[in-house]
Length: 172
Image (cartoon, rainbow, N blue to C red; front, side, top):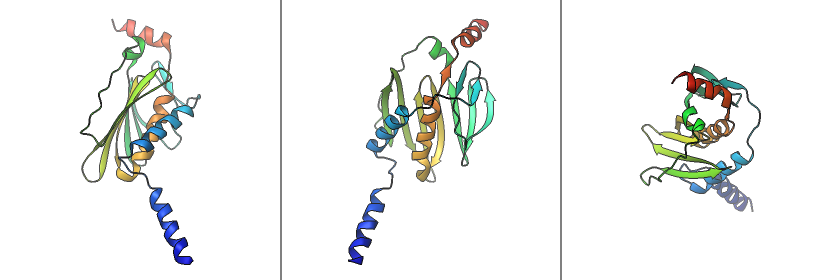
């Protein structure tokens, strides 16, 4: 009886691990995260604000590019205020050469997730949603959390139309 319990427990534990290549787990992660989006903000930029998870640090703020740090991984956040202002419709083509290449649509906003295998057990992650994208390098066992955190940030992005209009008209 003890052997059966040990075997069943080990099978259960093995079945609960997350694979980098599991499309279904990332599809459900994206939809679940977007459905539970936060509506409060704690980080301000020029014409935008977003929620930065509390275990993240803002390392650099350069206008529409923020560099965030979490668990030794740098997250490069790029905000496309021109795309937002002009309501640019992004298109995305699935890339079969990547570990994961997926597009999604939520709340009339398009997005995509790309995961590419890098060197030394690192994976390059690029995610775009809501006129912003994040790029991060993460170890294999950190990919799922990096995707989740990136989506929390991107889905919380809120734009200030008046400030963006003034910034863009000032640069003409």
